[in-house]
Image 1 (cartoon, rainbow, N blue to C red):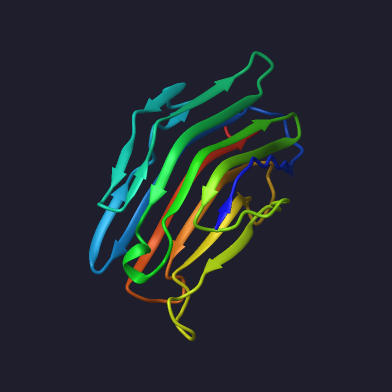
Image 2 (cartoon, rainbow, N blue to C red):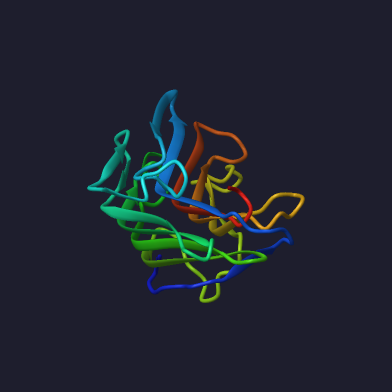
Length: 208
């Protein structure tokens, strides 16, 4: 099924200390095993306001024979007022990893992730458009989760997909990480395992 369009969603974390902020981002990463064969991609085109570089780009990255990230850019900045931000903009992601099991090809034409720090915490949002292989709801709440069912009734799901994934510490400290999309292969067990992540931005108002 095809779900086209763009979704922008805010998410916030609060804290109360004097800020020395950090921010980092990447186009995504992958670590999967299918049929005993591993395929990995370290964070693609990473940027970081502390460790650097402040900006990065990729002309495209293949992960094994089934998954491909298209072109994209990242940028990480710290402003004169001490706040930081990170931004990801990518395009033409595709994975065929589920096809051999009777599942769909998953495509995302454009995607982005962004976060910013404030004096009291962080905020973030994601955006994606031109999606096929699963249905995108009109209103995507943080950590919206859906499953790709098994090929036959009673089979375990092939994948769990998390949209607008928001990760915050169990003890809130103002930091957050947002992922545009996470695909977890065979979350209840099966012939594959691992995660594919699309678009990551992390901000911490007190991380520096």
